[in-house]
Length: 251
Image 1 (tube, rainbow, N blue to C red):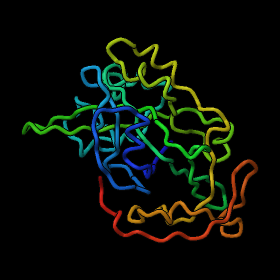
Image 2 (image 1 turned 30 degrees about the horizontal axis):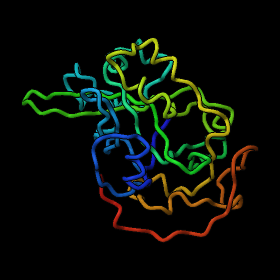
Image 3 (image 1 turned 30 degrees about the vertical axis):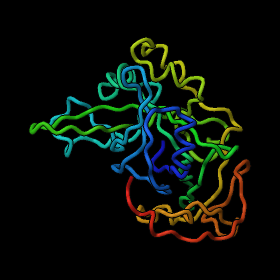
């Protein structure tokens, strides 16, 4: 699954990578949690546009969002058949920019968080879905979910699920819901290559949403880990970074 992510790449670099028309200016976010805004890229009249949506998809047919399950992830294998995601897979596909994400490895000894990001240090795109919910008073709210897939070999050391990561050569087809149907789009939803991501153990500071600063990504030493490391997981010591309290606001 994917329950926390980060977007710390500068806005201009994000725009260059996704080639959208807008020029949003947003602060780095180190610990984005469900129900908070996430960035998305989607098609509007054949052009890529940037939008913020609430993380936790609410289908348009829901009557009372307060009593509806928070859908932060959608299983790539079944999203096209599930009532909550079926229409979005056909009409509302999007890309979700991320500098990295967090995952927790569960063992009998406890849970160890990891910071996971592209090995080349670049930004990446998660496959996503979005929808618009309208309340009885006429207000609209856009919300979204991240598609997940069975983990590749690297991620399976930490968790059995991982976000779907789409490469730039798939962006056009994924976003083009007018010409690319659900069957073709589903073929793009595959685990990324085993060497695309690297993972480092981090402290439990990431567990608290209020800790939205670069220190949550600081790699810890093996001695600081709450559980024993597994083979294949990157372990590195790093100097603590200065906390920046100015980045606690949402987008």
